[in-house]
Length: 299
Length: 299
Image (tube, rainbow over all chains, first blue to last red; front, top):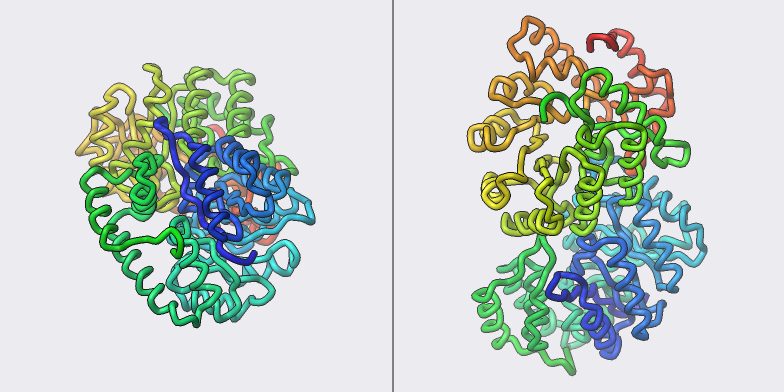
C-alpha cells in the first residue's frame, strides 16, 4: 500500500446525511494530487457515526464515480461483528485494496484471546483469499487496543491477510517497537504525521493521514523522502498546524480547514456527538489560517 | 417502570447467533417470577455486539412468543445515530414500554452539547409522544458518560420523554447525587445491586439488573422493601456472589451461573470479544455455586 491514503473527511448535507457529490469530489481531487488511494470511514471520517447502509452506499458512490476499487481502503470497523463482516464482504465485492479494522469497541477490558477471536470471526467469515486487513490501533479513541501478542497471533493465523497496522496511538516509541517486532512482515503506518519521517526511515511506505485531506503532497514527502532538505521545514509546518488545531476539537477543526480552503462552509457540518465550529471559532481559525498559507500545488 | 426489569443475558446457538427459543423462555420465566418487564440488549446482554437486524429480530421474537410490548424496555444504543433511531422506531412499533439509550460511544471526549445533540437526533427523529427514554450511564464501559448538565438539558427539552436514568457507574455517591438533583422528575435506577436499598429508600421503584436473570425476587426485595428484616441477609448474599463473580469476566460468569442453574451448558456461549468460561473455570464456578444454593422459588 505505497503512498498516502488520506483518512477521508466525510462531508454532510443539511440533514447531516453523507453528501456523496462532495465525498467523491474529495476522493478524486486527492487521487489527482498523487495519493495512492483513499480511506473512507476511519476515525477522522467519523466512520462509526454512520450506519451500515450509509457506509455501503457511500463506498458504492466512490466506485460509481470512477474511483477504482483497488484504490480504496475501507474502514469496516463496527461494534457488532456481523456488521464488520457485512462491510468487509462489501469491500471485497467492490474489489477494495483492503479493510482497516478495529477490534470491537464497546466492551472494555477484554482479553487478547477475545480480540483474536473477534478478528477470526470476520476473517474466517469472509473466507476470501483476496482479503487484506490493516489492523487499526487507536486506544485513546476506541479504548480497546492491540497488544503485540494479539498482532503476533493474527500474523501467525493469517500471514497473507494481515498486511499492516495503522498505529494511531501517537507515541513514536510505540510505533518503533511495532516496527522492531513486526516489520517487514507487516507494515506499520503511523497516524501522527510528525512521526512519519522516523517510520519512513524504517521502511514504512505510506500513511493513512487526516492532514492529507488538504496536505497530501507534504504528508507524502514526510514518509517517502524523510531525509530530504525540505523535511525540517515540512515538519515545522505540521507542528504549527497541529498546535493550532489542538485548540479545537480535531475533526470539526479539520472540517474547518476544508471549509476555509474550499470557500464552502457546508464542510463545517459534523454528525453528533461532534459539534461543528461555531461562527466565532470558525472566524478565529480562518484568521489563523491566513497566516498559514496552504499551496494546493505543492502541499 | 415499577419492579425489576432484568438486563437479559443473551443465549447463543452453536454459530454464536441468538437462540430465540432460549431467549424467549428466559423472558417468560422472569415475568412468571414477578418481574415488571425485561430489558434486552443492555451491556449484560452484550447488546452492542449484535447487529441491527439481530436486535430487531430478537425483540420481534419476544413479542411473537407472547411477551407484551409494554413489558419490554429495549436498549436501542448504537454507535451510529441512524441505527439507534431505527431501533427506537422499531421499539415504538412493537409498543415497547420504552428505550434504554446510551450516548454514541465511539468518539471520546465529546462535549455535553454534542451528547445533547445526539439524543435530540434520535428523539426528534422518532417524533412520537409515546416514546419513553431511560438514559443509560455506564462510563466504565461506554467511556462516554452523562453529566448533570446533559441530564438537566434533556429533561428541559423533553420533560415527558426522559423518564429515568440507569446509573451503572456503581458509585453510590454518584447515584444519590443524581437522586438529589433529579428525582422525582426522573427516576434513578442503580445498576449495582448492593446500592438498591439506599435508592429504594429514596423512592426508586425498580431496577434493570444483571443478577436478576437468576435472582429476580431477591433483587426486587432489595429495592421494594429496603428496610425489611431480610435485607441484611440478602445484601450479604449479593456481596458474596459479586465477590466470587469478580474473579471472572462478569458476563461470561453470569452465563456460567445460568448454565449451572439450568444444567444447559449452551448458556456458556458468548460472542467475541468476550471469551466463554473454559472447562476448568466453569468447574471452579460450579464448585463454588454448590456452596451458594439459589432457590428458584424465593430468590
